[in-house]
Image 1 (cartoon, rainbow, N blue to C red):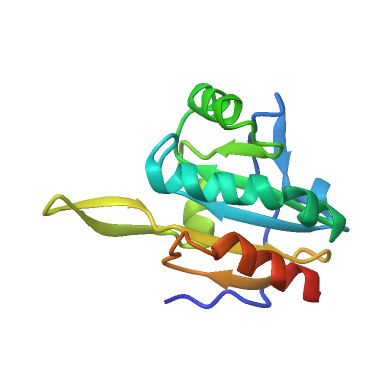
Image 2: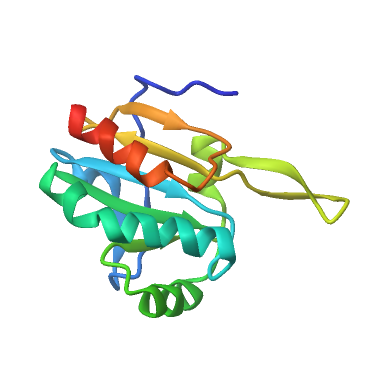
Length: 154
């Protein structure tokens, strides 16, 4: 497991469902939760996104933004966001640049075959642009609440 805590995150810019690129530098001064998930509109990813959606007002009250990242296209993200009424943006990392930066691309077993994909992971970036906390190999139940609890402690 890679421990990235306390490291400064280089700025990155990727297409966002906001209709423009998301830039980490533009979020400086606020905390940001970046959660990486494998695929739009799949059971675990839907449950995880819904949990962040339901707690979003509390994240905002704590001075924290939330963004979800996967390798899906912007069009796929837009449909998923609309279907689930996510109040936060989804980022389309189709070239895996951000996934690689955070070390979330892993070999996984799917139906008995080895496939390369995103390991469900979350990161809290503090107001100074450093990784305050990371979670790897996330289990969805209770995860968003755990992240919120951490953010509220900052």
